[in-house]
Length: 154
Ligand code: GSY
Image 1: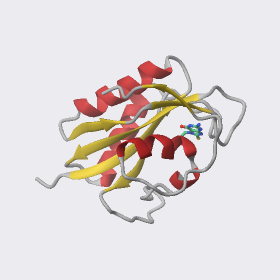
Image 2: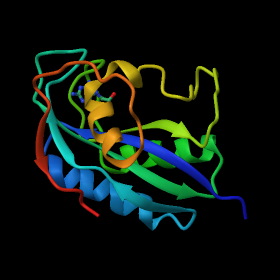
Image 3: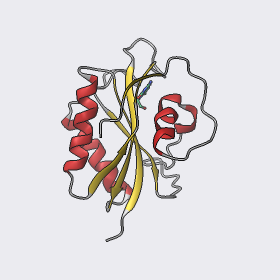
C-alpha cells in the first residue's frame, strides 16, 4: 500500500480548547488509514481574520496515511462535524478546525483543496508549530501574540 506524509494545522477557540485538540488527534488515529506520527508544541495565538473572538490554541500534526488528499479532506471535515464545529460568523470562533497544509510534495491548484495551503506562509500560528516538526527554515511572519503554552500531546 502506498503511504503518504501529510501535515495538518489544527486550531480551537471555543469550549475546552485543549480537549478539542486532543479529541481531533484521537479521531484521526481512530481511522485505520491514518497514523498521527508527530505533534508540535501547543501555542496560544491571537485570532487572525476576525478580531472579536477568543484566542486560539494551535498546533500542527504529521500524519502517515494511505488516503488520497480528497479522502483525507473528507475525514478532516467529518471530524470537524463530529466535534460539533459551529461557524456562525465567517472566520469566527470554532470548536475545531483541521486544515491540510502539505501532502507529500504535491502541488494542487484545485479550489476545493489547494495544496500547499494557500495562506500557510502568511500565518505565524501555522508556521511556529510547523517548524517544530519539519525542517522548515523559511520566513515566519512576526506575531508577538504567539505564546508557547504546552508540550506536544503525543
Ligand atoms: O484557519 C484556521 C482557523 N483560524 C485561525 C486559527 O486557527 N488560529 C488563529 N490564530 N487565527 C485563526 N483565524 C482562523 S480563520
